[in-house]
Each structure stands twice: as C-alpha cells, then as structure tokens.
Length: 199
Image (cartoon, rainbow, N blue to C red; front, side, top):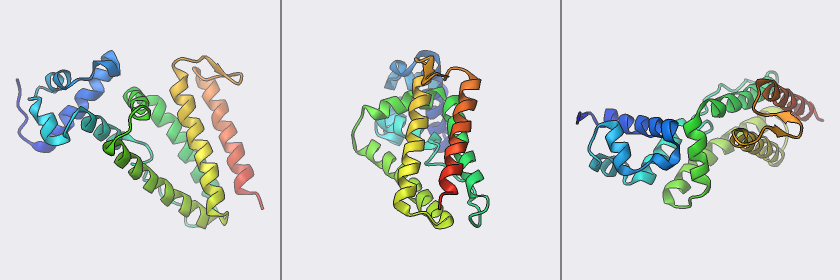
C-alpha cells in the first residue's frame, strides 16, 4: 500500500477517493475501508485528518461547494450588476450539473443533521449574507428583498439540477437536454432584468 507522507497530499488523496467511488458506484459505495483502499492509505488517516467518514464527506462538500467557494468580482456600481447576477446563477447551474459527486453528497447533506453539517451550512450562509448585502448596496434594493429573490433563485436551481437525473420534463421544459437549460437560463435573465430595473 502506497503511503503518502505529506498531510495535505494525503487529505487530497482521500477527497479524490471519495470522488472516484461515488462516480463509479454511487454514494452507497462510501465506507471507511473502501475510501482508504481507493486512496492507498491507512484508514486511520481518515480518523486522524477528518475525524470520521462524515467529516471526510463534509470536507469534500466544503472544498467543492459553489457558494462557499464563490469568488466572483463584484462590479463597482449598479452598472454591470445585472450581468454579474445572471452570470453568477448561470455558473451555479453549470457547476452543479458538471459535478456528479457533489450532487450525490448534497442529497446526503439534506438527510443529515450534526455539528459538521451545521458548520458547513454556516460557511455557506456567511457567503450568502455577504453577497446579499453587497447586491443590496449596489442595487439600492432592500436587503430583505434581495435575500428573498436570491433564496428563491438558488433553491430553484439546486432543486432542478438534483431532479434532472430522474425527471425528463419540468413545467414543459426538458431538463435533461441542453435546450431546456438554455430556456431556464433565459428565464433567469428575464427575472433578473425585471427585478434589477424595478423602481
């Protein structure tokens, strides 16, 4: 068994093993022994670096979560804000649709409630609040309004992406086809324009 001496390399090997196992066999394939074998390291290192299998899974989500890691450059003023928001939501769609493992682990997150998951959600919440406050300041719209609009948009995107694998059509839109997602993006753009320009 190959032993990776560098702590960060080992941690990344374990995270990569999670990705490979879920891609190959689904979330059900995850287990301490399976992950350790896939990574080529001792299973004790999972406990040492992540505390548990759940700790490893939450670390994976934290590393790849779209909102936690969002680092888009805010526009300097109201001009360009609409385009910034549209592109932000478009990237969320692309990001989630391209990461099979993350989608599977989001489902896992929805069914778990513990301190690790709570910390993960808190980090996501902190980035969300920061974005809401920034958009409120730049748009001139009340923070409460921005938060509501953002919550509906991000939740709808997440739901539709998670639904895509098992549902052909949603409200007449073919969500398993690129044309359907193009239609959804156009709808997002329309809603952003109507909202951002509302007096």
